[in-house]
Length: 224
Length: 224
Image (cartoon, rainbow over all chains, first blue to last red; front, side, top):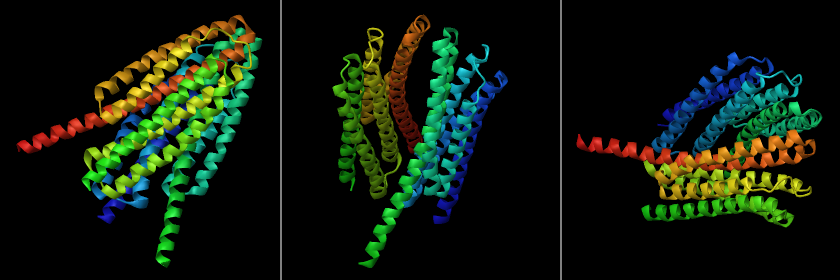
């Protein structure tokens, strides 16, 4: 049974990495549709959303079945609970990418307001955070998880910078208000993607710290 | 052991209801601080956020311990997984209330932009959705859960209405832009609270439907 559990765990990790890869692609493509003013990218993103929604159910089901069948305890149980939570974060990142698409579709129908530099930069950082948070999870790497959480400030700073700049546009030219609002919303969706990656990072730290505490406790018990 | 599990389940449900009660209070007080222009309400909301964060860890831990100790299967296991997910949604509702507070603190330092009617109405509906979603969960009531999900449209419509109205303010008077932006953000935080309640509703429907499918399957097996 042990070997079977490990094999299933390997598949579960692979599926989570696969799902997060789709989310990363969605984030990058949704921002690319905006910066390249390319509406053709959008239908593919909606297709990927369907796939990520299907994967969420599949992964959730897989983790619950593993719990019921193998009745793991301690570290393995915590890992499966973590997988269920992280799976949920990935699905929501997909939702954010779809929101970005919707704003992009509205924006590219109008003349560009300004050259977009900060938003692709935000998307790049958020994408890296997503990748690193999943790597931290499958490897149970608390150091990498901590780095993910720390990068959230970079994303927040960019969001504030974008907000201030676009506010100036809005005050100077009322014609820019609707487009500026859409760009502000895009930056907020990217901020939330960073938040989801940070949630994953925190979960990993919590899991690894929990292991440490349990390890420490087990060592003390051994000495008795 | 059975009786012990049921007793623990009862406590778990009570803790979740307690946590969601705090979230409801936070939502209502954060909007009240804005409508009544009363900064004195804000520190209490931050205290409640600490409490809700502590409760999240406590409830999470309790559910995982119940899994490890009682090794439940089928319906009971699904319920515990659901409790962990819902617990997470409640904590995030608390975060949204804190975001509303922050916007309120900025807004009440400036003259009021307009009488606030839609925002308290949104907060009222969102609060009811939170209450109903938790009731649906503890009672495993899919009909009530479905009603919660349907009300999400009411919240979204109000959000769109608020957006359109405030956009007009912004275009007419550049001095109103910053305050209008803050009010739009408040409406988006309330929208997200509605989303969290809807997530809970969907989870309940998924759990109950899962039970039905399993029941149906078990009946078919019995007939063999």
